[in-house]
Amino acid sequence: MRIRPLPELSALWHLRRGGDPVTLMHKRNAAFQEAVSNAALAKCDAVIGFDTSSWQLAERCAKSGKVFYLDRTIAHPAVLDRLMLDFARKYPDWAGALAPRPACVVEAEKTEHVLAQRIVVGGSFARDTLVTEGISADRIVVNPYGVDWEKFSAPVTVPPNHPLRFLYAGSVTARKGVPVLLDAWRAFAPCDAELWIAGSIRAHERTLIPDLPGLRLLEQVSHAKMAEVYANCDVFVLPSLFEGFGLVILEALASGLPVISTPHTGAIEALTELTLGRIVPVASVDALVEAMRHYRDNPPRREVVAAVAVDALRDRFSWKSYGDRWAALLHETA
Figure 1: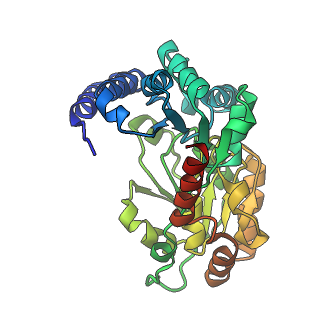
Figure 2: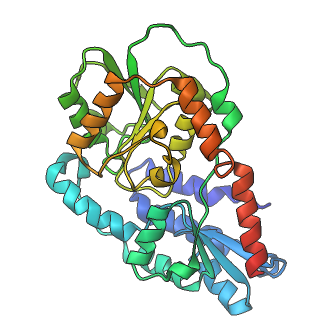
């Protein structure tokens, strides 16, 4: 294993001083790839690269006859651009300035897509966005992520008789559908429920969050402490516009929380039983309110949700299964 901290530290230093994050990350990724020697590549049978981080490696693999796999961690950003154009009309303050991605980043991404023997994604939404952008479906492999079922199903002492709690976990951004969630909570206006938001909040987004009854901001919570947060809540909400695969969905289900989410998150793969949750249209305040009201009127039983999740999902959504599918893919294309 090789660790190259200097490009990372340099990028972080410039980010904190107001540098453009997309351009800085592109330069960082280029520096990392340049540090991979030809001798190191010669020892490999195949290379696995991440999206917008491995275009140079893809080109070098093509020249040397090495197999290159692209592990695409999120759906195709061209689709996000179109989604955000519509979203910005309703939430201009949240969407901010919709600047196009730098041409160098777009070209790097195209190179990765063209040269990859296989493109691996976490869910069907990510796959469909790639197909929409002209990538052949037979080169795309869906390999959903896993979850530590024992960690998130471990018993945690929860205060009795707490109000019904809805939980959102993730960065507080437009892409994650947070303004839709806040509008839905305002319309829902329950007097006997709470909404917890756990995640990093930038200064601008903080000014846009209204003071609503029952709303509680937890800020950034470490992954080690998230099991306790899930255990103190009852229903998980992820109204995201755009994901690769939302790991938090699996964590919530393993904790016994039913999930309200959109088709763009991995929910289609995970919510295979009605007991496990509800899928609502992207950016639909009304549908989100209806789903939350359902759980307010029919409080879920944690032990029932957890049991159904284990029975329906555990075999497929484990890290062992994720690794086994990768191993099979590598063997198939070796």
